[in-house]
Length: 288
Image 1: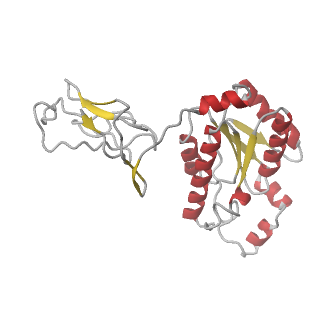
Image 2: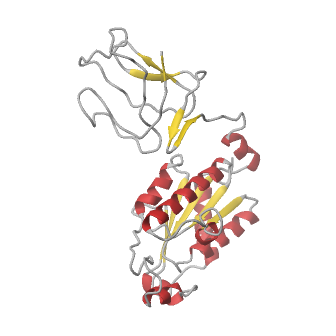
Image 3: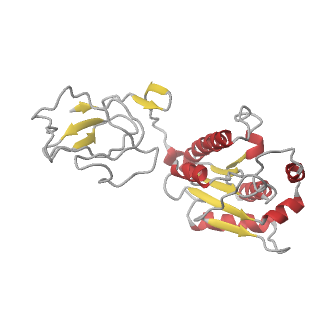
C-alpha cells in the first residue's frame, strides 16, 4: 500500500501517452504523488507496457494500492490524506456524522442552486425575490445571493476587471455550493457574463443540482429600463467594461430554463417564478 500524499490539478497519464483516459472536469481529481524511491518489480512500475497510472478521485482519506496488473487504485478510509488545494497545503477534510441527506430530511426539500443569469436590467433580482417569496409561502427555505449585495461584504475587495469578475463568480459559486449542501435552495442572481465561469460553478455541484435560468431579454429593452442608470453612464464613457456595451455577454448554450421577452410581451415575475417552481417540483427538489 502507498499513502496518497498530494492532490493537485487534473491530468490523464498512461505509459502510451496523454489522453488515453477519459477526462474528468475540475476540481474532482488531481495528481497522485506516490513516495516510491525507485521502480521495483514488487510495485509493477518497471517501465514496461503494463506500467500506468489510473485517474482516481480522492476527497477525504485514502490509500493507493499497486495491483498485479500495475494499476494504482484508491482504497481505505483510515489513513489520513494531506492535500494541497490552491495555495493551502497540508489540509484534511473533516467529515461530520450529519450529512446533506440528514439536513434535507429535516427541511423536507433538496438543496440546489438556481443560477439566474442575464444582462443588467433583465429582471434577475426581481425574479429572485419573487421566487424566494413563492417558495417561502410553500414552506421552503431559500437564500438569495444577489450580485450587488455580495459586493457589499464578501466581495467588496473586487473590481469589475475581467480577473476580478471571474473571482467574484468563483466565490459566489463556492458559497452557493455550501448553501446547497446545507439543504437550502440557493438562488444566485448575477450577470455572470462568461460561460466558462458559469460552467465552473456548475462543475462544483452534483449532476442536476445546478439549475441555470437565462433571462433572455434583448439589450435594447434592458437599456430602455436602465433601473440603476448604469447604461447611461456606460454610453457616456463613465463606466468602462460594462456588460452589453463594451464587454460581451455570452448567453447559455444548454441552460435548464430560458425566460424570454419579445417586444412588450413578458410574463410577470410571479408567473416566471411559477415556471421555475414547476421545474423544481418536477425534478423532486421540493421534497426530501
